[in-house]
Length: 115
Length: 110
Image 1 (cartoon, chains in turn blue, yellow):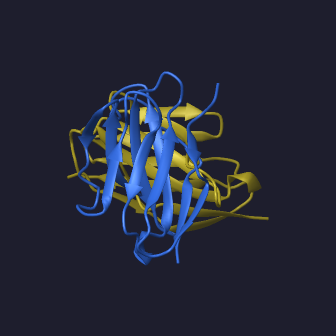
Image 2 (tube, chains in turn yellow, orange; image 1 turned 90 degrees about the horizontal axis):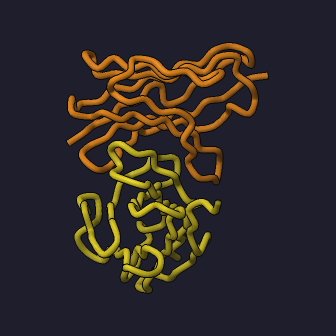
Image 3 (cartoon, rainbow over the protein chains, first blue to last red; image 1 turned 180 degrees about the horizontal axis):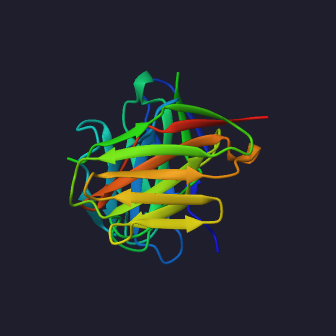
């Protein structure tokens, strides 16, 4: 029973490049959430998706960031033209139902370093 | 929107003693309160949760209490062990998402 999978685990990008982070939810889970964690800080909600739908993107920066969860394949968080301030750990979590009533299980995270 | 405050930010307790972490939330509509443990460099792991129709829940050495009137909830760890050293996050729901507190770094002293 595989848990939430994320890849890559570590990603290094130069300023101005694009970063693509992937998340495969647990089997049977159709809800995906992305969080950002800066060093020594808590988890900040970014976006909540269901298959082919963005439900809540209130935590996502308006520019350069986008997310999708296609009918087939993993959810993808895309950061265009990365800047040093984007360096962080990005976690995704999945749940079988609405996040407000169902447990969320986290993936191992992708640690993005922008040089 | 929901605001979750967590105290203390750092907590040191002697091995074998109890640890208590407290959180408050602002949205009276919140109905689900999970607690996560995160070890250094690892993913947050759900350790216990409580729903608004329950005042207390216990799982071995871990217990959580909820006071909906006062909008605060607490995590209690008894008989602490070295492996309890980690960062603990409380959280509360806001509509379809979970809002986290800033975390408590728990040190278990030998």
